[in-house]
Length: 124
Image (cartoon, rainbow, N blue to C red; front, side, top):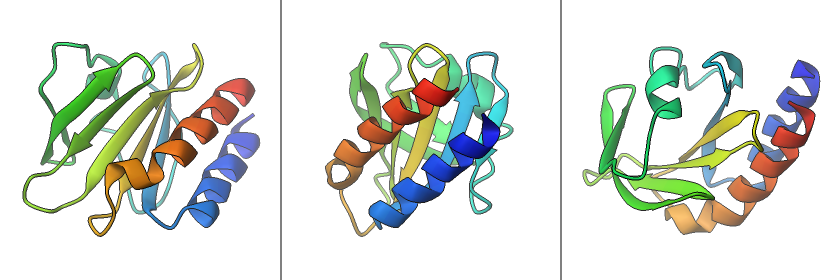
């Protein structure tokens, strides 16, 4: 399972150069896989507990304002230009958190983020 998740993570990074980091968190808060450049170990529990009332999320000490919060995804953007995050459900098995580089908009990576979250959820 973990190897399949890892392969899908590297595949989405190869497919979409707007995605600079990925973290897969299972529903119990355990990190299944994350890219070397983005360690979300200390943020995993808080990310799982985000709800529709959240107006911002802090990841690695960087605050992202939530600009969209629907069941299919949460999109956050850093107002000081440090990039964006997309958080998508991985089926009922957990979530996938994507870091989108500052030179792109979050919607530039949205299709691939949602597509690969679904693929990852299928193998979790």
